[in-house]
Image 1 (cartoon, rainbow, N blue to C red):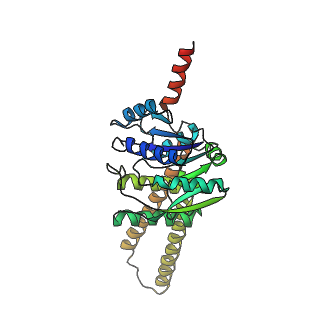
Image 2: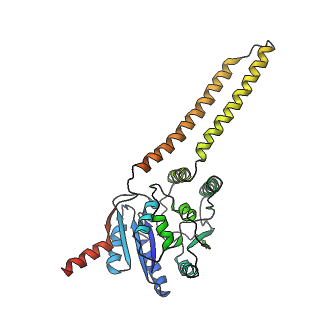
Image 3: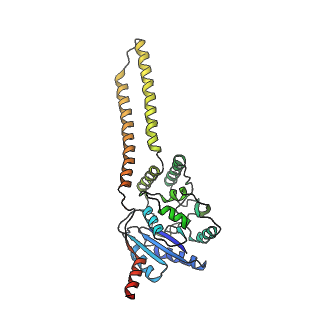
Length: 315
């Protein structure tokens, strides 16, 4: 059986179309499936539509979060709940073409344990967004040795990969990188990012910047190494100024030191504050991890509700 995991946040315009499209493709392919929508604390009619679909079609399952926990939490909730021999993670807006799923299944049947859908093109994205994404991927590749160039969350994973991801204890997760980090036999399929079926993207620059910082610090200690680099740089500057001061002293030349002292204080103060900020950020992440709070809280599971109703009838 194939599990299809679909994170959804304020996607009322897309729920029905997405479920209908994916179910038809898999039914025509003769694939036994479960379609798991994870409502990430939506404020519109998303959960109402998911609930109705789960009543009409037993292959549709809905998980509702108690509040918004983010896309990463929604993906891992789906991975934890799924019962399939393999699972596909796909976006709700149909920018990830569902028509690719049968090809993914064929590669999985050939023995590949991870099938990644990579972007042949990024669709209609602004210049700033594209530049930001390329910079982020370059930083991840150079600092954490994880190549995310053209990567997406659209993946098929074997059950052993799903179990490996579920066994990871960290609270702060980055699915796109973790699914690459675990390894396993991998194949790739290219796709062109399609326009959204409906609605607007829920990402903005502020969210993207926070997302990038969280994930870079989760996968690499490069920012901490930069503090050491800044310390070495400032030390070399200090040595240079020290030599210059000694030379002027022995030459009997009076050094105009006041502006230099102010400049050095400002530079060193800035480096110290930046360093403390980076260290503090890592300490905050450690604090979040050691509290061992759950990644998400599921308030409603339509499958469990159906099972409870069935058990009640049997009594």
